[in-house]
Image 1: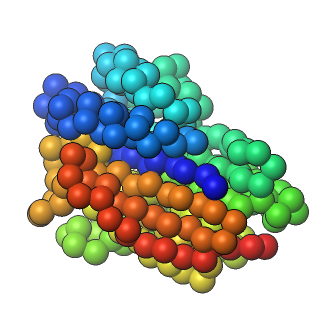
Image 2: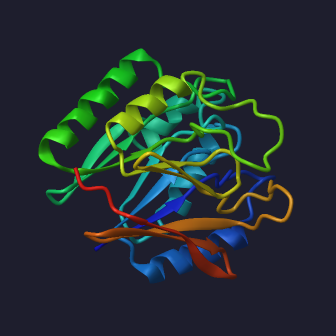
Length: 247
C-alpha cells in the first residue's frame, strides 16, 4: 500500500497566505506519515526570491519526501529561476520501488497565467510513459494547470493551451492518476481508465464560494485507489474510490 498526500496552491506571501492554516496542515500530514507529498504548484504568490526563501523554511517542516512542480504564480518575476535554485527541478521523474512512477511536469510560462506543456516536454512525457508501459509500472503525472475545466470555478481562462494533446497522451497511456491544482477547488474526473484529480488550496485565503482549505490523500493498494478530501482542521471524507489500473 502506498499513501500520497497531494497539496497545492499555498501562495506563501505577506498577503495571501494563512500561516495558521498551513501549520495545522503540516501537523495533520505529518501525523498521516505518507510515503511522499506531491505539491502541484503556486507555492508562492508573486514569484519573488524572498518568498521562495520563506517557502523553503515552511516546506522543510514536512517530514515526508516532498516533490513540487511550479505554478503560474511561481513563474512570475523570474520565479522560475528561483524555483530551480531553492525548490528543485521544474520537471522530474521518480520511481517508488519497482512498480510506481511519478512524473512531474512544468505547465507554467514566465509571467503568464495560462498553462502550456510544449512539444519538447510533451515528447519527454511520452517517452517516460512508454517506459512505464514496458515495465508495467503504475503511473502518476503531476502538473499545476488543470487539463479539463473544473465545475463551479467561473469562466474558463487558464486551462492548458495544449490540453487536447496532453489529455490524449495521458489517457492512451492509461496513466493511473493525474494530479492538478490551480483552481483552488477539489474535483475528480475519470476519463477511460485515468483519474484526474484537482486539489484545493492548502493555505491561501483566496477561496471560491464555500470551499475550505484542503488537501487530498491517496491510498493506493494492489486492487484499488481511495481518494480522501481532508479539510484542514475539519472534516475528512472519502472523495472517490476506483479500481486500480493494471496494464
